[in-house]
Length: 71
Image (cartoon, rainbow, N blue to C red; front, side):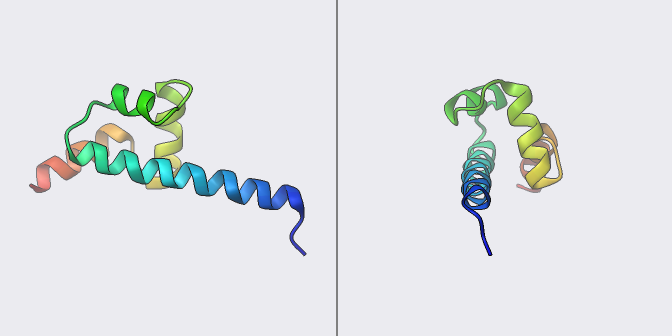
């Protein structure tokens, strides 16, 4: 049985994943990490960093370096 609080947590996780996916697109386009964190509504850059690493298993800087090296 799924409880209401569980649905709230799932919704919150979904929102974070969607924001991180948008961040990945912006990083590929060359946007700055600071600008992305602010644009996507993260409280600060460290919150963005932790959330990104939790979802992608790499820091935003590592991810940006990886995608730009592949081009």
